[in-house]
Amino acid sequence: MSLGIDFPGYVAYQIAKGFPPAAVTSMALEQYRANVNLFSSLTFLLAQSNAFSQASVIVAASGNESNRPNYKIAVSPPAAGEGIISVGALERATDGSLRIASFSNTQCNLCGPGVAITSAWIGSNDAINTISGTSMATPHVAGCAALWAQQQKQLTGTITNENLAAKVLASASFISGASFEDIGNGLVQAPQN
Image 1 (cartoon, rainbow, N blue to C red):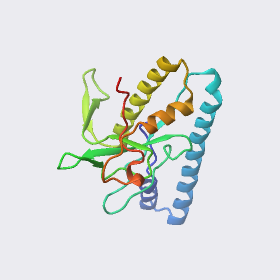
Image 2 (image 1 turned 180 degrees about the vertical axis):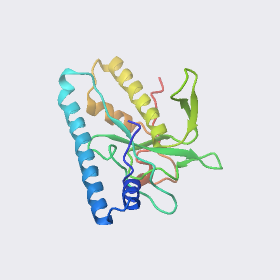
Image 3 (image 1 turned 120 degrees about the horizontal axis):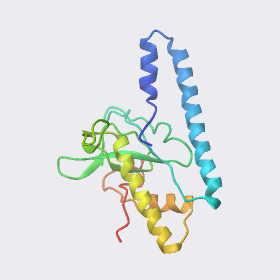
């Protein structure tokens, strides 16, 4: 899911419209809580359907509200929900190494490439665009999850939601010099054979 809730942006927008900060904060917190509960319930439903459906995981963008090095903001909904794989964005440093993108929220589960990503875009059939964000990193992780599911199904004949999530998270490559708080398990990896 390449979507999210910009909690600080929502609060600032409502305050700019003249609403009192205390009321806006209360409204924003209620929406935050409702969204986390909604998506946590969705993962619970998927877990319960494990016995009679295909294995699946929910992968969601962690959010782009941080402004490193000035401040970091924690993962936002829906990625903050229980059982959801939250995805941060990585960028290339000037020396060619990977590092967390300056906008990427903290406390994600793992990361994918998220800066200057070229992808299909809404418009004509040949429309493309190059943008940055955790929403661009999320499809990398979802694609790797699909490849892991395919491999596990071929090898074992069955796979559960929990096994799929564990495989995606455990196969990530940790990035030297990065903190677990910023990149989680590290850079998502696809099966190599």
